[in-house]
Image: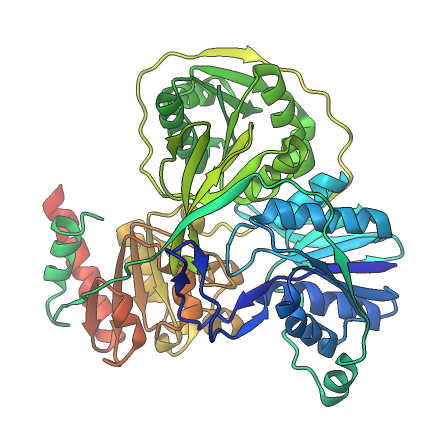
Length: 247
Length: 324
């Protein structure tokens, strides 16, 4: 049983975002990059737990990006992933990334593909569903609990107005949300071992570029907060009605 | 032709689906085209409502296999409808089904896809330019979709629903579906007291660690009840099991964008803001005047929630009495 965990390389949550080249590119200067938290905390850690429980033999990371994301992939090694693949290309969108990952996964045979529920950079929730589409595999989205007995997985996942427990036989794609696992801190042995784990770089396969970013704009944010006296809640309610027009 | 996917939940057309039909109708207007909706297991009244939202034609699909909303089957259904209708633009809501089925369909149809659009697209030659939030709301990006078939999912609560009196034609549409590989064993509802689900709620009353303990949530629930709002909470509150996990809003929980968001006793960590900063109006009540949330609020009240919230409840009651 082999698990493939696609990871995204994203600016740390607290990053002050800036753009460059006429607001058409993200300005990466001085930015701390991390593994997308949902990919790491929920997909990767649960995959590692399955391996530790003897339910999977191997956990492989896959990333679509340039050499500057190798450090992020090695953070995944420090947490316990066995090896990694970097597809050496920078894509314009989720479609490109998912197609590259699906092509690699088809050629190399994985039983389970575990993604995070979305990235904190592009917030599209797209790559998992697209990989499932390219590979014609089932997708279980927004999983909060995951267990495996032999070839059959039992998964709890979010649906409108609640959750449901489903069963599905491998292979399939699962997108992972809070509840799957707890965040881990790499230990010294993991950090030392990360340097020597195999990271294979492969060339991108031909892929479609269907969209492109024309421009970025920073969100204006809120400039003024109107302070209301704590003894004057009538005024607050009145402002919400007449000024904000929300009640 | 613009195709839009709609869904029924708890006996009603989902609000997010009606928004998507409105959105599709506007795109049809911009591109000189018309809207066909795909409706899954909808009754006559529900089909009529989809029509009023702007669908000229409705493909009514009746198939029990679709009840589980397996994204593989939903995607296949919309794919068959798109091919039958020759659809070039396909609209979903960026809701739970849309997040799973729309990207799958994009892969199947080689369609350029933008997930979570926040505004109407601009037509630029053969391309559509669509704005979406990126970096968890810290910025927006305009994407150009250049492919022949284009798919867009609309972020819920971006526009108010408008129902007109347009007539629509309903056609039964039969789909060929492979058997679902996902077997549903158990459903667990998280509905509490008939409140509107958080992703669709227009008014949300949220509270955090400042409430000191789960026993103090009575006033939060009462305020929500008076406003007909949905209750929410911050991450630590969910992690300490003061409140159920489905109430957790923020980066790791549910991302929401209601018209009005009350943050009571929540400091406003960046991870929390990432899930709520799309709200149209934010009111922050906090005893710490240095709480970072005030920088992201429209209205702020500094003071003790335990004295302010009861006064606020009285003020809301008085306001409602005057409205009647």
